[in-house]
Length: 220
Image 1 (cartoon, one colour):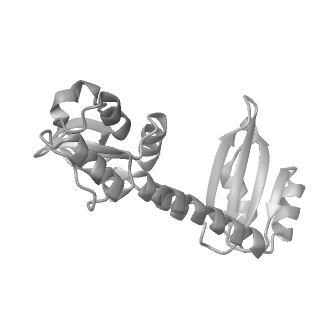
Image 2: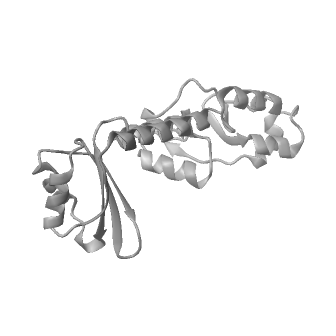
């Protein structure tokens, strides 16, 4: 399980209230982000964005002069990675600060590092196949799904559940084997609906390539 303190990137510095907008823009360009936290010691003021600096047309002014434009999202060091994803996605941030229980600044989590951890959680680099099931919500039993996979001498590397509507779920399974025919037959015997199955190396290469494109985009 990943929590916020495990995701901190200590290489990216925080700005000080007396830094100028020009300094902020320069650091944002250097570290390939569009936001940076403003911190005095461990006192967390909030986040400034490149858009806010440019909108104020005062890049040579100190950041403290437009503190009212800062937003102040908070992630605590013990928050789960899903809470981090929710906050960073909801506010459309390139990074998010992490604080302790007293709201004292600890460090920064970047969108780039978050994407890398998500790839690890999804076992993108692991060999194997993928099965996508469509299941009624009231029929969803992960224990039974795992039992079916394991009865075919395989195991689930990762799983993802998304709600299709009020009645149906889509369950995506990454499995550690590419030969899925036996597993699929067993799912069919249990009346599961197989929405898709992918088990060739070309697909795996395509997923890795798309992930590479994403990471390159985040590095721009």
